[in-house]
Length: 427
Image (cartoon, rainbow, N blue to C red):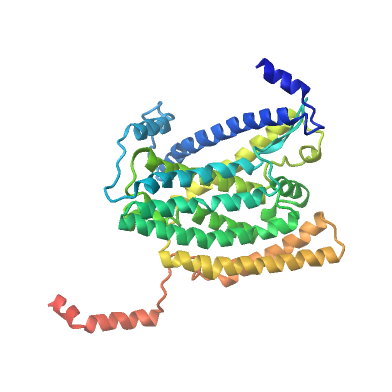
């Protein structure tokens, strides 16, 4: 400890060479705190899902372990998974069978490192950014690393040598690749407004130009739907559809190898929620003040920004759980049709329109501010009305429509009633 204190005392925040020691120490501290909170939060999220689902269905959730609140239920589940026997299918390819859960878990754990969660903290050694790794291409890093999680799922299905697991892996690869494109396209209008791919820059841009969810509502809608599909959550949990594929790609897994898949799913939920907050809801920005963006900074302001960021993220986590226990599952053909026939063309069209509006406003000499945001918001509201009130008549997004027309169904029923098999069954 004495060596660490001495190293911090000689660190000069103005000189990168002499400030390297403080930078390394603060980075290690942030890594320990952030990833501890992240993993404990993922464990408590399993309890929150059970509690919220019980509340929605008017029943009791876990209320045995850890008192009436069931607070120790995640710990009990973890101990149970550690104690259970590890099973390996006889025909499985064991090296990849063991590696697949790790490949699914590591990308989910890595992406949170580049998401800013608070205003800079002033210290005697300089400003400490509230982010584990402040990459200049942080957003692109998230898209690149999060897309690697599909390899763990596909390899889990293939290495199990089980037809249900293989079908689940194939479904997942097709689903995630389909919606990754829409997710990436939906964020381009955000990058056009911010003029940068650094997440802190996007947060600062929203502090003065308004939240992007107001100016880019359709982009947020596309990103939200794609985030549900990327995390394999209802109504997009086709890869592990229990009624069709037993348990999907993790049918043959047991003990902690099985647990890594749900843990990675919950970790992806946290990352997706934090990313939605950062891109569309102002991130950690404290409203009604600019001190958290340009200074002077303070410890209390940093703490308040962290609380605001966590509150927004918790709202979207609740929204994830709420949707799971509210909407039915899509059919697989509807899932793919929504991604390719609706989401992708809408994202591309929206990019062209927003880019044209931004170019027109910049050419007119209108500076970024209240008038700029008002014009962009008005154009956005017109597009929202066109998309949700005119284009969609319940035949694109709704999961309950049939491809056949009413007259075609009537002819099919008539032909079935006249068939010999139908007459024999009646007799």
